[in-house]
View 1 (cartoon, rainbow, N blue to C red):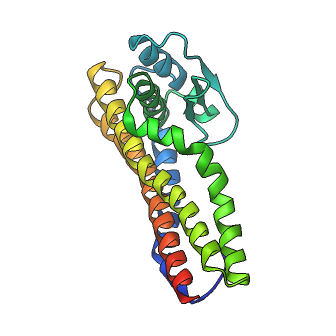
View 2 (view 1 turned 90 degrees about the horizontal axis):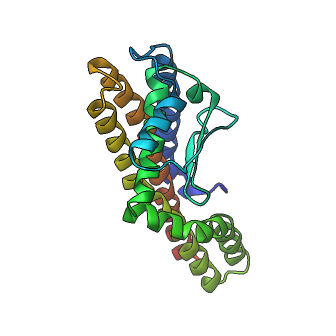
Length: 225
């Protein structure tokens, strides 16, 4: 949620980086979606193999609609892959499937940043919208108390974005090591998968930068009241 004022300029760098990151991940995914892997495994097959190798036989691999909607659901312990990943034998699909498997492995091994992120999800779901509403009410009624509450609530959003960074980078590192170690991808294929996952990681960096920029903006606005 945005409202315009002179502090909006603080968001410009984050907006530019966010736009670039979105274009980068789309172009990189599209590029390596056209490159088929030598072994010819589909994303779903790779996810299943890697899950089974970690003893996660009870984690199903399902297809979900949409594009780049792939995710591991720690609450229901389900791997969900988009059509572009689930049935594709491309390097991009295998990289993404392995990345999501990395999250399942994190969950199994009680990876601390993932546990923290999962724990604060209910708070973030509430504060992401409530923070702006309360902050705007503080502006309208010139209430420092409400402004501070709004800033504090938005701080939870920033924390979530910052904790997400190690979670995503770690999942990608796990994925690349497994793909190489199990000879699922080879040589230049690993480099291609790394390019896809690195581009995807930049979207999380951009989201964190945007959240921090928004928090800085709110702090400045609250001090002007």
